[in-house]
Image 1: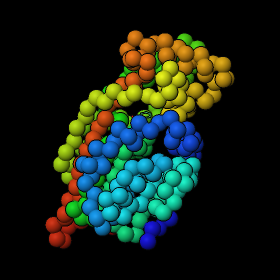
Image 2: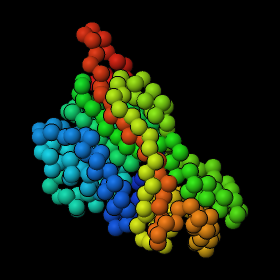
Image 3: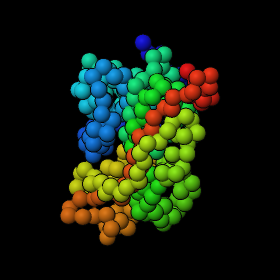
Image 4: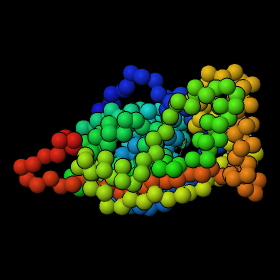
Length: 278
Ligand code: BEZ
C-alpha cells in the first residue's frame, strides 16, 4: 500500500505544467527514452517506481513487462492526464524531494525529470530510502552542457529586450557524471554505469518548435513580460539559433543526456548507511 507522499508547501514549476500540451507536442520526451526502459530490464513481478512519470507513457511501457509500477509526479495535471491515458494503472501525486512509500521498490526509474529537481540531495535521499537492498536506480536527465546554445540564445534575447534580470532564473540542474555519481555514492547507491552524451533532439511543430518548447519548458523565464515582449524574445531566440539548430525544416535542440545505473549497496551486517535507512 502506498503512503500519500507529503507535499512541499511551495508551488514549483512542475505544478503549473500543461499536460495536454505535453502529450500533444512533446512526445519526443518519452519516445526517445524507450531504450532506457530496455536498460531498466523490468521483470515480471518486480515493483518499480516511475519517478516523475509525466503523462504515464513510459510507466505503461514498464508495466507491459509484468512489473507492478507506481507513477509519481508533482504535477496534478500530469497525474490527471496519466490516469486518463491509463485508467487501470497507479499514479500518485508527490514531490521527488519528499516522498515515502511503505513498501520498498526493486527499481526506481526516472526519465527527463531530475534536471528539474533541486536540491538534488533530497531526491537522491528519497530514492535511496525507497529502494530495497540491491535494488537499482536507472535514470536519464539533462547533463552538463545540456541546451547550452538554447540557453545562451535565451539569455542574449532577454538582454536585448531589457529583461536581463530574468537571466537570474536557473530552472535546470545539469550535473556532470562525476558530480551526480558522487552524490549517489554518498547516499549508498553504487554507480555501475554512467555516461554523458550528446543527443540532438528534434522538436515537434516544424517552424513553431522553439516557441512550443519555450511555452512548455521555458515559460518561467518570460512569465513577467507582456505578451508582445514574450513574442519578441522568442523571435530573437529563433533568429539567433537558426544557423545552428534549424535543420531540414525542423528545430533540433542541443540536448545532452546523463544516463546512470546505480545499485543500493548491501550493507554489511551491523552497519547501516545513514541516508538509506528505512
Ligand atoms: C531536458 O530534457 O533536457 C530539458 C527539458 C526541458 C527544459 C530543459 C531541459
